[in-house]
Length: 114
Length: 310
Image (cartoon, each protein chain N blue to C red):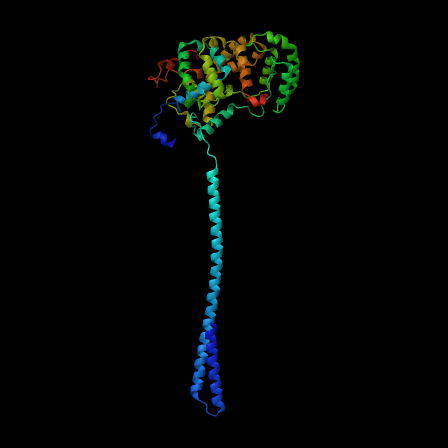
């Protein structure tokens, strides 16, 4: 980092680059409880936010997805959020519970299930 | 060598004999004495030569021995080399198929390290009982699940849920796929109560400790995030900032919790622990308005307003 201080071309917001912050946010979306929360705050209905989610689709590119710590749930959430019925439905706590259960189930490697 | 010494000995003997003869004839000749001395000197020289000769021959033998060992070494080296060459040529070369994209191995290892967080830790408890399967499948699930060391709370729950699952199998098939059954809800309840803190996504605590939350705290304190550099702060600084921000946020969080609890009353049994999760800070989803540094990108993402921040 010492060499960056002199002329860091990356604009930093409070010390973090935009990519770092977006990476963090997109991974938070993997948490169905958080999605439920966002739905409750009516954030999912805002067209600005919907456009932003469209912009975040760039994380599907392997060049960026290799930075994900939770690639499966993150990319799945990105896909689902593109669909209007999902955004409406995630407000429902039973869906969010179902996603939690399914997520936990699918997290176990296949060989352990058998 | 021997011939030289023999000649020397012979000369000495001759000189000695002559001298003795001359002395016996009462005619000692000095010449004979001188000759004897000369012969003796020559003999001494011959003996020195002998010593030298011995040394030389010993050296020659030593060198011969050395040469033999070196030659043997050389031969073994060459043999080993030829064997290695043969082996090397015989090793099959991995043939990469043409359509494979080369991935740098260090990237691969880094990625594996990253996603290790989303991989099941060994202490993970077993699956919730799969109610849509037949009972045999359930027993099969129980078998391998004991291989995974499970929490003590989970183990008594499992046979209990299994019994319930058998009873409810009929009605669970009639349910909509998206509605979880009661036993799964119960399983989830036990999961949350037993503080099993592993999920394949960042859980609430992790989100709270994340950078976005830090930025939120800075905003709540009324300072401009573009001025500060949070990466340079130590952990205690961050805690202090968080505490300050939490004090400022206390009222709004109480409001949010009350609202969430009211909602939770009407939810299903599994929703009871949810108020904990609803009280997430409102900010991490939004980019505040000061963040106008990227107006050249999509202008949409800068417009997330912060009117939800109460």
